[in-house]
Image 1 (cartoon, protein in one colour):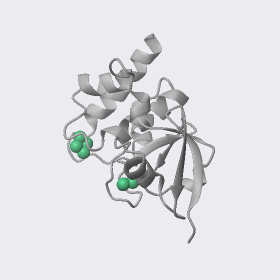
Image 2: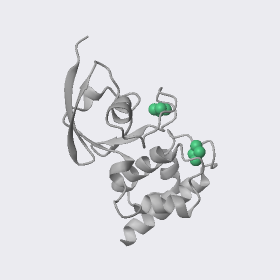
Image 3: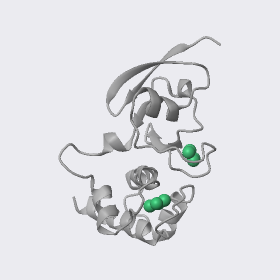
Image 4: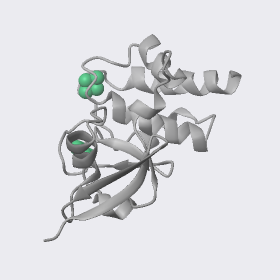
Length: 158
Ligand code: FES
Ligand code: FES
């Protein structure tokens, strides 16, 4: 099938890619544009390691044909990270030892970002619910939930 050009905004910058039909956003990010923070896990929508935000909502980029997001805005962990340090969510993950191997971390942080944007003071059950599509094999989840809770407090405090 014929390739086509898809344009979208990535971390505030306009990008255009030439793709075959049904090429996923994950493949475009990692293999064409070399943005590798979104990890490749199950490639079936089951682990959340590939999560990025599209127009502010978390999506599993392994399931999303890039042509479906033409004209939309994608935020990855690279775009969230300030040039001179860490975003408050990232810092809270460090402070609460919520990162071990780190494979799940990018996806967890992007989900946390969307949650805290929509709901700056989530309850622990709301945090658990938001993160329910993201697997972590290392931490036992409690440090991640603590980190998201703390990040919300810090963002509220400014
Ligand atoms: S790699 Fe996308 S959900 Fe697992
Ligand atoms: S820190 Fe290793 S999978 Fe979550």
